[in-house]
Length: 339
Image (cartoon, rainbow, N blue to C red; front, side):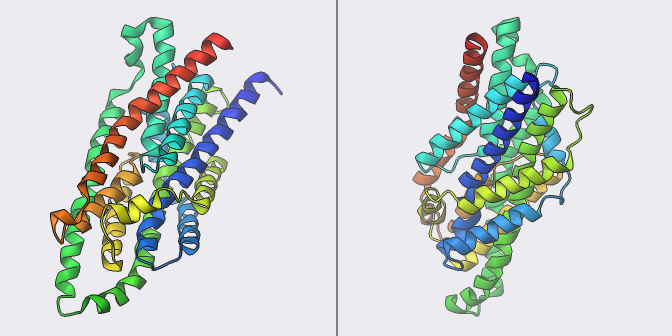
């Protein structure tokens, strides 16, 4: 077995580890609302979420994978080492934020890490003034636009759904409403986990396919079936084991949820994520569900949302891309000078 093939295997395994950590980290997003409303127990909820993470494997094509793998960084500059160091940056940031219980974006950690390693390589070869030329600006503009737009869609859609629910059930008592929505929330939670699986697993699919193209094992950027199945299996397994440190923040600290508000938050989030997936943009399920939870909370009154907690989460969002990029760039420098 050649050293190059061994390195490719290491990178593919690292990408699947990231995918697993993504599911582990984002498990709270998939289960927090349905657990906090006590529709399902935590164990039942993660089984439910993991199942729909996996079955979304062949649903929305590979548009997001192509954007991540070849639409953010010039593949002519990318090497297997760049991708490996990008994954190190993303995994490191994910683990740091998991430890502190911050629901940050695994997706944007991956984007930042990938870009940071590529920038470091270009800076060493061509000088710092040319380092940002490796980035494909069209892909980044679309990504950054949806970084803001997707949570806003989730917030507005959740707020609108709550208005519709209150109007349709205006003659019903809250207790009677919750009888219906405890059942409906099973559907909305499934839809959210389905959307999470099809969007987030594609990011790992894009990285793995990029490695195979860079190493010459694929002639063009076409995602193999084994990559699709592996990515979805990894994220489903991560979701199954769960990131329980973040459940409390998502399910209780932003605003108090009931079955009807949980249903609206999950449904609005699923719509926003599936819309983004349809246009081939990788978005943060964490961002979207947080915006949706804020939307259902503010329907009662603005003070019902703990905006201080939400503000801390937003700061963590904006730190994610540059922080992961710095870690990845440092990793590339270590690899370059030490190996």
